[in-house]
Length: 330
Image (cartoon, rainbow, N blue to C red; front, side, top):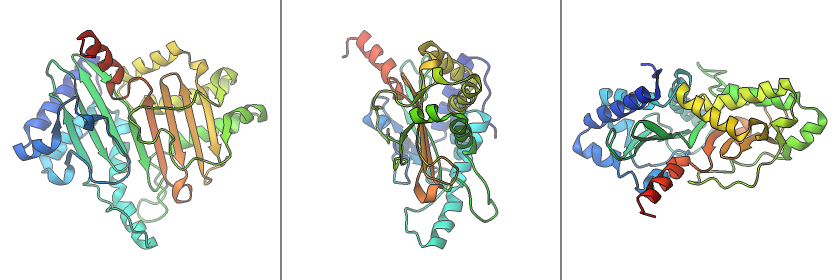
């Protein structure tokens, strides 16, 4: 099964609507009770990335064909690359369980079947609807309204272990590019630039935006892209693309043009912690509504959390506010 490659936004929305309907139609009434919520239910804006009990319908509670339909829905919001990353992160639970057992670590059950699919609202109707896929280290949220995907963030991927230390998958690094490109950028900076970019001596324990429904960060900090040379600008653009290009090209292009409109030159790159691989480290890209955070601090710097946020429109908050205002609801 492969992720969708779309040709126009309408066809992407059509496919998302269709995949949402097919998934829902495959469920029994008791499964629907778990999987379905109203679009404006507060559950829609609650999200979290550790292993835990969640609302929604888990893979464990689906049969084979329902799982396939669930993954088909997930694939509509992803590219082939990000779809494969999501599947590998889910499979990584099978690697992490035995690793922790070996080390005598007691934790929440590591289970690739504890990933939950949830639908808010009704796919393909007149009103907004959204879907969520969430479990340990995967948290995806897409909102659709009429012929548009109105929100695709928060978008969270993590990996534990960031690099598999042993066994048949030894050396596997699912999120390697977003780590390696950032080190390339840091290492390309001269001392003056580093002084601006490095804002923390130690990497924070986790991403600072954490699992908040609404991003609240201090003003942009670090080194602006305008203070970089052409080579560095090329590297930082690759790093930004690593996040924006997780979604199909028509959505990514739209996000990229919004960022260019804001002014790519005004985006800040900030760093915290160690300056070489294997040391605890953190970075952030922040310009206006665009925020990316990456943290590799836990488990001896072998445990990644990374997220892409939209300050004013996570969970389609901005679009919905305008919609409700125009109908005099607020």
